[in-house]
Length: 113
Length: 112
Image (cartoon, rainbow over all chains, first blue to last red; front, side):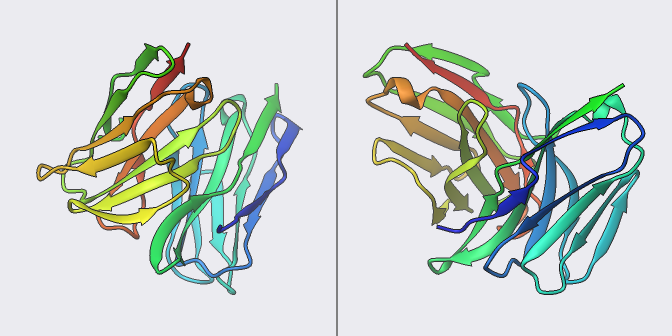
């Protein structure tokens, strides 16, 4: 099946530090989406990317759709304690003749005050 | 609030039983996805519907089935439940099948 390789699996950082995480795949994706999930809640959409090379910001978050359409990264600048959560990348890709929205395994972010 | 509503929020049932999870998509969204998330795991894609028709299938067990009704709400049916089926089940919706998807709060299923 389709795999999205998301790294790192977890991060422990100090408040104020910048964070970078990424997703890669051997297949081409038509869209890249980044979500944040807090315990007991549903994933919340942070950023959506639709064009190769697209760079989009949402406050302290910046994400890019890789030029090869096989990767994406998410940066968080000046982290704060409420950034804690699991960040998932997701993408729409054609698989078995149908388009599917597949997810990476997540990056668990811990921010120490 | 994402606009996607899932009911019930929690469900506890015994092994061998059957349950139905319900999802109401955001107004105007035609596509509904179902995902399973086990403890500390990622989101496993189960199935997607678009305007009432099955569009894509993931690793959905034969004991599980879903449908999308004319009013676009969807139901996920889980039968012959096993302990390992205990998980969070999420529904998401999107306008079409290739735009951003918005998630509901999930149904936490516990099989005892």
